[in-house]
Image (cartoon, rainbow, N blue to C red; front, side, top):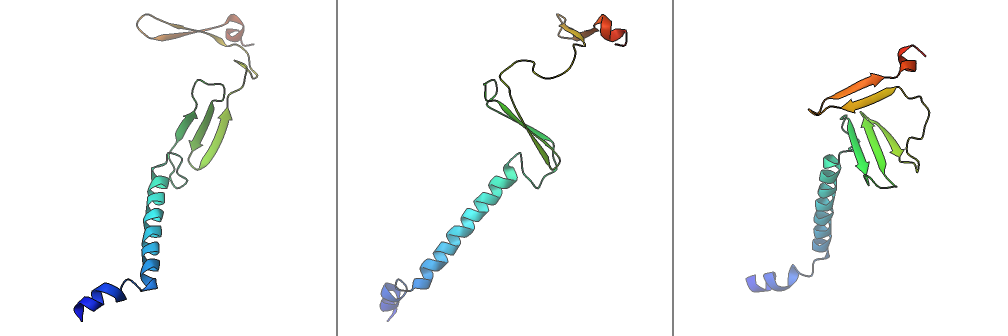
Length: 110
């Protein structure tokens, strides 16, 4: 009787395959939750993060996350595009320090 129980009845039960599928889905859900938590752009964290995609290439993008706010910046084709005026010049000394020298127009209050 014991041998007959182990051989045939358990392998014919269709509910066992359903239980195995449920176990598989629970493992997949657990892995997806771990991936979401480890992502630097996690929607549930309030950290400040900067992610740079394709650095140094023409299709470079930056994603800046401040708390729960996301901003996306894309690089343009031209260098220095935008509005503004030149405020001065920065020089690097031999010891690595940076010195900023304002321009005469800016220093005069223009």
